[in-house]
Amino acid sequence: MGIQPLGDRVLLKVLEAESKTKGGIVLPDTAKEKPQEGKVIAVGKGKSSKSGQNIPLQVKAGDRVLFAKYSGTEVTTKEGEEYLIVKEEDILAIVK
Image (cartoon, rainbow, N blue to C red; front, side, top):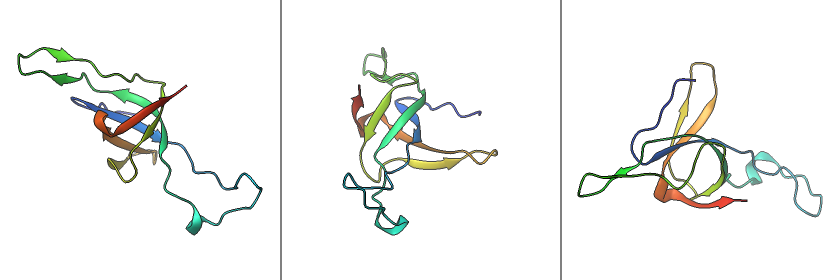
């Protein structure tokens, strides 16, 4: 994989949406909500402050995160892998 995000952007591998409800009902693809959880694959170097200092990102590779619905840009590699590039501000939380 040769994708390195720039600035305050983060490369995510989107985790699949649940195919069953907690009660055991199987959901068809049309009824599934867009996933909002992903795994951080790579991060940019961070934002630059007005004084020129680098502000590092709060997430790191390997973190599991929740992100805003319908945010980011979907990208596909030559190998067929699908990823999402989002700004750090679109990441809502780190799942622990």
